[in-house]
Length: 126
Image (cartoon, rainbow, N blue to C red; front, side, top):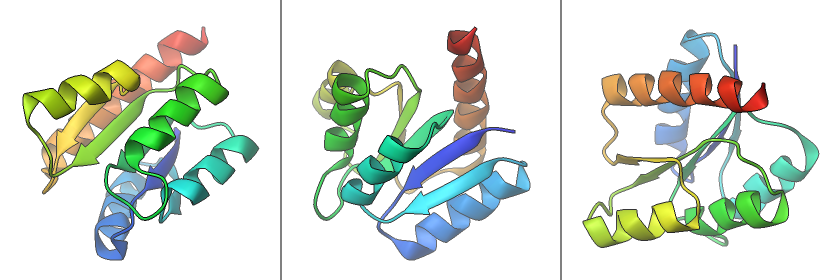
């Protein structure tokens, strides 16, 4: 069972993804913007962060930068976005995103990516 932070400003999407991950026996904390994500990351440890790219306040890339630069964490980060051109993905990887998933999110792909990133998280903690 992994502890996952989900940062998504669309309440319906957050509820659906949260339910899917909860059904897989993960502990899910849902926040609705980058500012809340950063505050939560200061308080608690997460095995995986899933964040939307475009949100009010801090963007998904701002959250990634905070995790990598301020917390100096190697926690896996899955970035979700409707932007999926190669230049954007390259930029996201450059700032420290571990993986990327396009919106609308395919549930089977999400489950596979989460399972892979959770196993990666367990490896880096050893």
